[in-house]
Amino acid sequence: MTLVAGVDSSTQSTKVLLVEAETGEIVDSGRASHPDGTECPPEAWWEALQEAGAGLLERADAVAVAGQQHGMVALDADDQVVRPALLWNDTRSAPQAERLTDAHGGPGAWAADTGLVLAASFTATKLAWLAEHEPEHAAKTVSVMLPHDWLTMRLRGATAAEATTDRSDASGTGYWSPRTGAYVPERLVQAFGRELALPRVAAPNETVGRTAWGAAVAPGTGDNAGAALGLGLGPGDVAVSLGTSGTVFGVSEVPANDPSGLVAGFADATGRYLPLVCTLNAARVLDTFRTLLGVDHAEFDALALSAAPGSGGLTLLPYLDGERTPARPSATGVLSGITTGATRADLARAAVEGMLSAQADGLAAMAAQGLEASRVLLIGGAAASEAVRRIAPAVFGVDVEIPPAAEYVALGAARQAAWALSGREHPPQWQHGDTERLTGTASAVTRQYATLRNETASWDKHQ
Image 1 (tube, rainbow, N blue to C red):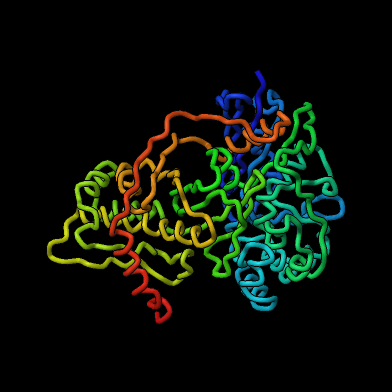
Image 2: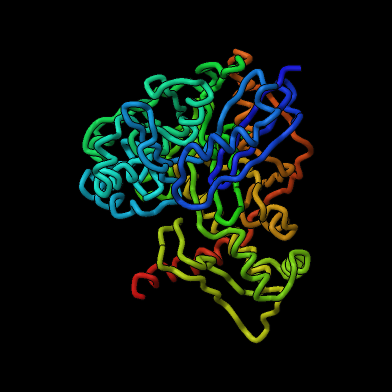
């Protein structure tokens, strides 16, 4: 039996899956936690990988790492980490993002060059912060890489000069172009003030090195691209991931170029593209309304499903603590259409319809960038809600599939490892249990939601 290891090194933890290379059958797994916070010493990721992979990694014939995107790992001339890595969720570089955008061509120019409109999550802005606020660390920095690049380098026993990355993670830096497949050195210089050594961008199915025990090392990938690979997404497929926040991403044949910044123009792990939309409000919307109604998960679902579509005229704009897509950081939630006939069931259904309608906005933004969803895969914690599953097809207006719950980021990394090991042109085809399929039918719910969204678009500007 040929075994491969897939690693998901996320913000919170490392997960390792040991998988049979031909079938995708999960043989064993391990997990270890990361320190909390928005910065982290990379050595903590390595220690977590050793803990999670104990008894697993050495059994693998190939390994790949899917990691949290955008982080900044700065190294000196001796390949030593200069300071703890700034993670994607560290927002201290927001002023640098705004300054870089305004000073160097505006949002349209950055989107055209890199597929991105700069935000504090992207690596380029973190480099600008480092140069401005920690000049002593900036002066020592000679190379920069991403979390999964650093772990891949360690697995290979390589140097920074030999480091590799992949298209998906490079596309989240702000100084690489999915359209041309090359770094954009002038954008790096604008951010940091000078050039830095950068990892080579490897081919999707390349073997970039070997571990100490002789296993092949694949290039690895970013976490969202890893999930897409684990889910087996193809062109026209879109995943809607409903965690605390919502993520809408899909595989496209064309690169995104959205000067509004709603759609991030990432690359995927196969040579295609992975446009992505992120909303701040998803599962926590349902949690908030469950608390307000004083019910548990099952009771909330029963209430929501007992109400008619349209929630008796109630419409929720679910921007509870501001929103990223659309960019309304000062907004709050709005509940419209309350009458004396409103019921608790209407309120529960309005919460579900509002949360899903916000994700439908993401689907519409993707369609404007050339990715019209032919199929939606619903994943994440809130996909376990029966109300969410039953209401989603009417809100999205397309067929919805709910794959079995799994660690799809780690599975995607394992699938890439198997692909590199095989030497084949395409990744192996794996099946992971039965998928629930629900037929999508258009409804008036999204029009009701769009009316409220448009009516309130200027409210937060006047607060």
